[in-house]
Image (cartoon, rainbow, N blue to C red; front, side, top):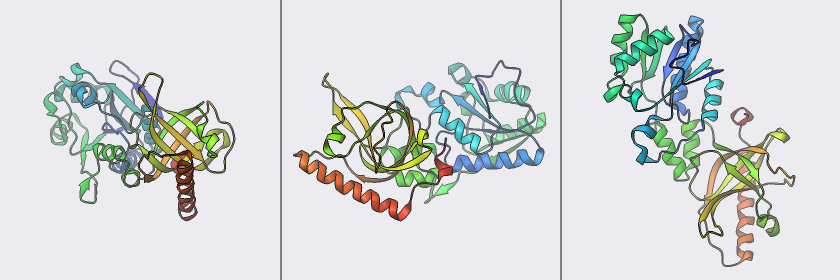
Amino acid sequence: MEVLHDPTTSSDLPHSGVVTIGNFDGVHRGHQMLVAGAVARAAELVAPAVALTFEPHPERVLRPESALKLVTTRGQKAQLLERLGIAALVEIGFDRRLAATPAEEFAREFLFRRLAPAEVRLGTNFRFGSGRLGDVNFLSVVGHELGFSVVGVEPLFDDGEPISSTRVRREIAHGRVKEAWRLLARPFYVDGGVYRGERMGRKLGFPTINIEVENELMPAHGVYITAVDIPSFSKVFPSVTNIGVRPTVYENYRVTVESHVLDFTADVYREPVRLFFLRRLRDEMVFASSMELVSQISRDVETSRLYFAQHGLPNAELVRR
């Protein structure tokens, strides 16, 4: 897949394709439905399927006080869109100048003149342009005049509520990773590198890998049944992960992500890994003694083993990078 960053002045953009527009954070089931329609239509027309998105996320520019944390990194989003069949990802640099651009100017000067789409597909709740005046109906009128068709796609509902990136973020932030899995159609995952920890887990009989996470959004503090993809082993391993805080020498608290990989003792220091959150086991706890801590970890490990005996590991197609 070709990725074009901030292409407003580029002359080498994909033309005559089927363009789908959105922020696509998380690439959840609703996004997947939208993209699948664009990819299928592009195949019918023997044309490229193009995803048009904005970077940074518009909310970070227009409402920085919201401290938005995204579900996916830019790399993860691109990878997920490529797997769905997108041929080109066009990332438009978003700033206040672009936000103030009238919807008609954006539709004519960029969408039409630069991409010359055969068809545009977007969610019926998507808005663009100054004052958020651009929508499916507006674009349909412009498209009819300029010669491209526009298809509006209704939101996908789950349990009576539309699936949205906001909803996915809420589930993850509250530690409801099973529910997030349902909305994403895959386990929520984070990428990161393994760093050298204090080896406390090893001293307790449960060695862990410490992960420096690249993702912004993390599940609520607690213990989770997880799976970890270690590329150097070309294998996904069952694991138990604790997300919690640990005081530093500066009296601050650092959030740590520590995974005990079941029946695994190899040193993977500095290796990149991908960690999948499958089920939440419990909240963070404070223990009166090391003996109590070891006893609880033992129970967590046994519960995780039972889970994997019943459910197995995630489908390799869902986890491979």
